[in-house]
Image 1 (tube, rainbow, N blue to C red):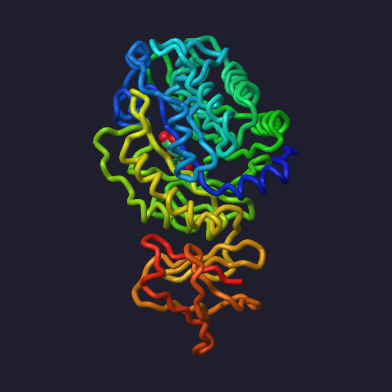
Image 2: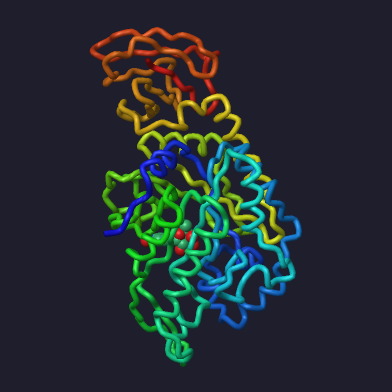
Length: 409
Ligand code: JFZ
């Protein structure tokens, strides 16, 4: 039976509610998202030619961490190694890594150092279960390596991530698909192979008792998985087509792109508006989910300025209204078309996201609520009873452009 994260770690992870996801790697050079090696059928030997080109001279760990902090994001989950198999830190277990590029530096170590200087952001790691580069994963037959060699690599890297960078927030796994290895004639074959999750998760829970384990499997959580993750959709919504899982009683996390791709995509200008991002964050919080919002930095090491600006916009809203997000749990007031709610013990936060008229009515006002005030300016609002519902009218002058929070106590 696999261990779980500590209760403190689980509570803390839910309290922090908002994180920055970072997809960054060799693929950022091609600027056509993180799957480009696969989608453009680039052979390993060709893809390796990106190594001498990787030199993100504009990378500044303090700047990335301060963008996250300004956005109100309390954790950063960065790709330690994505499906392309390239390690973005100075792993001892592979030469295919960032410190062997012209950049030479270890950006993840630098992020850990930048984070250690402050107390408002934590580091977490994305780890790919599949690996298009590792010979024991892909070129099983001709390499003479066995599945056990890949497992030793994967588990060994997770041990490094849990040992070398101080206290971490989470390990975020991805890529648990049936293994398609490649044989001598470059043909795919189904190759099987268990990731030995019990051991892998135990390793994390032993080395980092407060860190939570997430595996983006889109299936019911396994023992040792602390958080149930949803990708590109709110829990219970399935626009992406792959979010058919039932919602478990575990704490939840929603991850989303800020535009339409994870890894840097030069052609993608479809950035979500600040208002929409605030809505997605509070809609996540209202169902008890963290919101992990992705950015794909450029090959030069910059978070795209438009993305940084949107994030800072969310942070401006949170500076005033953060009380209605951090430390809250799923709302007790049922969502309507224009409102959702969050809750902290006996205090309920009604988030008015859209106005079609001046008043909103609440059909299921929790008993004991006698007072209402606008969070951002303290203005008292009256609670009128009408047709068995509680009606709240919010004068225009008291509204927030993104989400007017009404504190009910
Ligand atoms: C995965 C990755 O492949 C992708 O590159 C990115 O890192 C994202 C966060 O996660 O995408 C997935 C993973 C699982 C499914 C679909 C997309 N799934 O199970 O349907």
